[in-house]
Length: 341
Image (cartoon, rainbow, N blue to C red):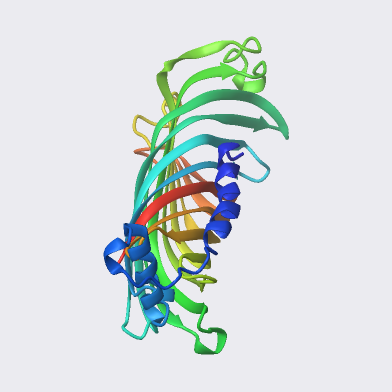
């Protein structure tokens, strides 16, 4: 779940809508008495007649993204294992740019984000004969998150007006998420081949200082979608984007540090396959001056792979399995600032 403070960002939308419709500045005959804000208002009046005022050609910015995420997948059919990773607190800094042609018909934009993961847990369940034989919980922390992607855009004149622009975008990018789990607590008494591993519910098998699991997900994805910029006033722009991911090369490395039976090296579970999904974003951008703006919004990402091939064991592959219903989701809110030129 997103932290409740995320909702506060959407509450600011109402305030921006009020600020976005200021009373028109009256004509001032004595220029020497103008305040800086009055000068800024005059600048906006001069800008109002140009297309660049509504759709600035170039932009560079930085934003802070706070999000939560989860990963889950099943191994084998019938199921022999299931892993559920849930992160409540991910913090990421993201730099971005937008460069458009002089007539605003063509667009090049890109994003680069780096951050970390904290405050979460992973549930590791193992099954024998269709029933749960082992169920343990570990705490997540000190993970890392990084991504970059670049898109080309082309404005669709048939779907655009003087206050509204819709563009088709196509591009690609790379995304990596590393989640690290420490400590091990029993959620049930072990049975079958797991008997003796957990003898009581709540038993601490490993302390929080011991690294027990790590999940390293990597995607190289193709993006195709639409972007819309609506500029109801000189100051306010509402930008919405949806990008479908029809194809992504996918690898997921799973490190079980306590499983010496799977070999002397990690990762001891290695998934390879293809995935698809979507990335969605909504953002409000408000001009403080002709060159600077503040913005806030939300993003949602989802990747899904119906089936992957899993190599078990390292350095010697002890066997192969199939992983099913591999799902990655991320939802969060951001605040930022940008410079328009």
